[in-house]
Amino acid sequence: MAPVAPPRVDVHLHLTRWWPDLAHTAYRADLEYNSAGLLDEMDAARIDFGLLLPVHEAPSPEEALAESRTLSAASGGRLRPVVTVDPTRGEEAVRATVALWESEPTIAAVKLFPGYLPFYPHDPRLAPVYEFAHRRRLPVMIHQGDTLDRKGLVKFARPIEVDEVAVRYPDVRFVLCHFGNPWVEEAAELVYKDENVYADTSGLLAHPSAPYFERMVEQGRARILAAIVSVGSADRILYGSDWPLEELRVATGLIEGMDLPLADRDRILGENAVRLYRLDEAPRAGAGSS
Image 1 (cartoon, rainbow, N blue to C red):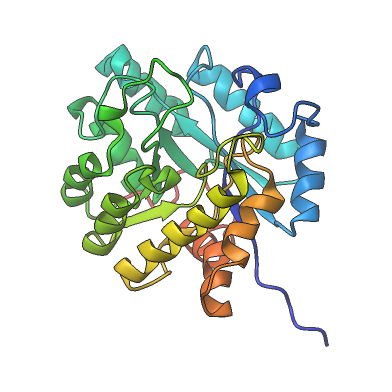
Image 2: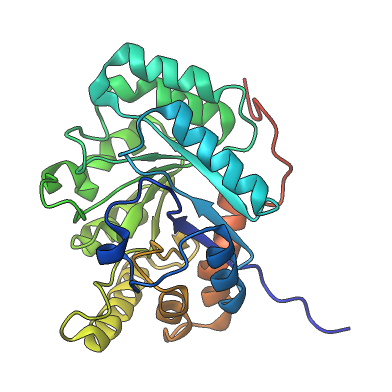
């Protein structure tokens, strides 16, 4: 019998009608930006599953969840929905949004957008979100570092700001998106220090038309490798692309070209994500409640 290929999971994909200015932000202007196009690209990159991250521009949590649910069903479950909330709308809005999630069994994670929105991850208004994540054993993914929006305030999106909630909620798993870029070393310190903190490799590259793009790919690979050496393990490093900003072939190539044992590369490309997001389990509403 032929050996079974290790699973591959992209933990950072965006497919939504509210994506900002696709023609200028996507890695290719004529990108087939729909579920069929994404699944074709996943097949070409040998990616089995992907997480569909919402954007904060969605007009309401209900519409964002409905869109993700529809896309997930159309993909046959290969694309798993992620939900988000805006704490700046107030405590009641946060609680109403969490109540909306309670009966939805397909949610794979929660995504927060500090930096794009003016709040810190340790904002007290987020307590119901972290309590929900604990009950459902769902990771909380947190935007980190640079923003696509020039009006974003990156002071809210430094990895060090996640340390407080990681300590306060030791049973919740937190994912530092974009490896904290440009604060990759700071993100690595949190992964090293806090056993419930992970980091993904998404969004480390600019548009392929950018000057020195090939050298940027080399630098991105070197930065990830240096962070892994600093942490001392690849067990909490997750592959992600930030599609449509990055081509899946290029994003997976960052990992495939790293000077690491094959077992570590397989962990990063999918095995760690299967374990963290429990992708081998059937979705269950209220799973992990206590």
